[in-house]
Length: 196
Image 1 (cartoon, one colour):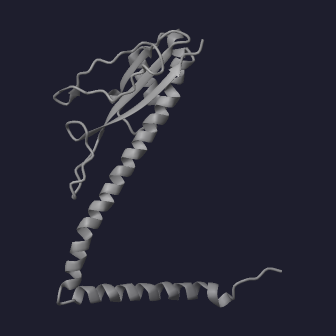
Image 2 (tube, rainbow, N blue to C red):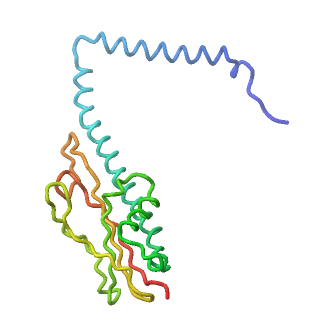
Image 3 (cartoon, rainbow, N blue to C red):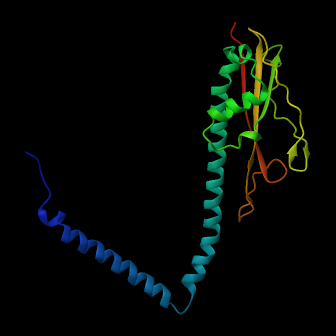
């Protein structure tokens, strides 16, 4: 035997009456707010709303940055398998083709032409260069020259993929740019040994 709600609680007319009552109450409160003569409610709202909106925008921007960083790391992890398994070497994949593979594996957040790929062998794991590079610019264009060496079977490889993510200055001066032109350098690094 199952318990059921009384028909009076779930009747459509009762539900409609409840919704209408809630809307009337909200409408009455809004009219009272609009008729206030002293203005204290509006001033308090203005004081509280500016930091609240600024904080909300900052939270959205930080969330997008973390999402983009995670997407870049997942994209690099998937694409580096082409080098790890020797598929890139056997098909003589160029740096431009590798960028296309990165683009095909990315979730669509990135402008594919803006990927910067640095792939080079390392003599040992401790000698692997995983540091953030210093970018040089000519206007808005990065002028660094990146290595692209697919290595040999059994060789330790370092793959660094960089992307300049645009950030915006918020109303509270929250600013996360670490490169010129309001950009944040996102970087995903993978160190692996080519399969024999």
